[in-house]
Length: 197
Image 1 (tube, rainbow, N blue to C red):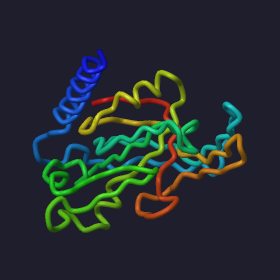
Image 2: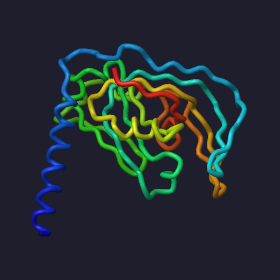
Image 3: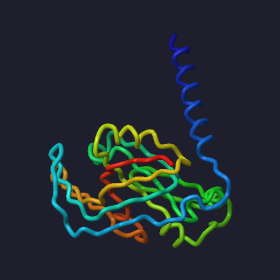
Image 4: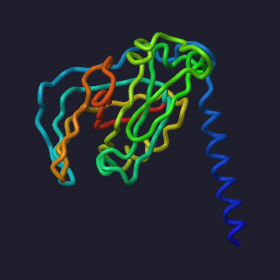
């Protein structure tokens, strides 16, 4: 019986990864030409949810290609942000470029390296046309929609870049730049809407 259960699990995992790969491929060419839209708000009116205090810093809208997804269940931030999305636009939405990159996520980081010998773009171009977004779903339905995103999807996310003061006294602040790197360079996005194009 255990062998049958294990077999079913392996088949389901295989279907998942085959489906993910099927969605990942696109013809060469830039699929998302526009940069993200950001409108600084100063420090808008905060709100509280589940003991966490959210302060909006900017309106934010991004149309992008999903490069990777990484769910979190047990890390320190998972109660606030259960899913990270690595996204790309401009040249980082081009299949020809992405075929030359190896992209990974883990421990709240998004990393890339050459898939073969050389980078297909200058590193500054990769940095300025991609981002690791720590998503904060605004509702259970938005959480479900975020979890349904797959590598290769073309999606639109709209909401606020925020600062979060967590119930345990911690603080997590979004980047407001598309060109920064290292710790603190990720966007922390309270997601109001999700659309797949």
